[in-house]
Image 1 (cartoon, rainbow, N blue to C red):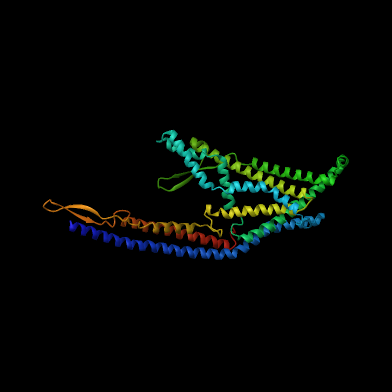
Image 2 (tube, rainbow, N blue to C red):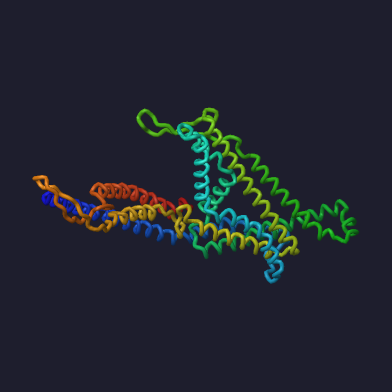
Length: 450
């Protein structure tokens, strides 16, 4: 018995020594990954710092510069000084402009605040559990699993898609918040000067001329109105109707079918992507394709409805205040300011860091850190126990033994798996780091601002 206990202790000692060596190997892999992460992120941040001003200048030129130049040129040609229409001292006008964007702020909160990836995942899990329970499991489980996505309410998918596109597709994602505020202010000023200050004013003049030609000045005067008072409202109705018609036309041109590709494995085991017809798919897959197309159309209709309401709200703020450009300008800046805050607050859900950079490296580093911290599990303190031994002559004797590795102790195999996992992750980590650095190099050369 004594020999057996000594042998067990010796074996445990060897296992502990090997585990300690493998622990150092895993920590070494983690340290290399941490250094690589700091190096790559540092390089990219340095390049991004210099690029932010370049991106800001490009966005200001594309948005504010072009529209502002057109507004000034058209205004000069037709005698409209759009900048002189800004009267920020009229607080009641500003309040009206802010009030008209309140519905947009409420809709944005309803779309952007919920964690749709998590909520939809939980909803799908609940639907799958209900379907499997009703089907009784077995082969039906595969069919019910395939139909879960098709059973998810379309509005949930639309909200999730809009949220993701708003966060990931933000054209100012790499700008700092003060830079984005400057961009929004200058861009909206140029936009309001062009669309409301110049375009809507010229349309109102044209409508007034047509009213005089049609002899509507007398009927309007009898009702206590002047052509100059009615023309702006008619111009607003005309421009909003035109925007709605363009949106409906764009929605009507949405595809009625979706391209389908089938992923298969060839005889050599390589992954192949082949074109497929919807008719060749199974019933559940056809339902999924039809649902995806429906979600796409609903999303476009949602965006179109927002466009029409924005045009109505901005035009109404301008017309109702007697042509004060500060009213729609205040509403537009507030709306985009709040929306930008939503975009920045939701970045973590889509693997985007505070600087606007992807978090693929820090995520991989965090995963491996969690692995290393989980090993070895803390041994559970167990009290000594009494056991019985039998001597060679068969007589029983008792003794007390303390078990140091009674439960929860990592084995050599556990440590080896950890090191293997860390090394494999390091290779993937280095590949991601190289791609991120290459992308930042292309952006720095002006090849890809996004």
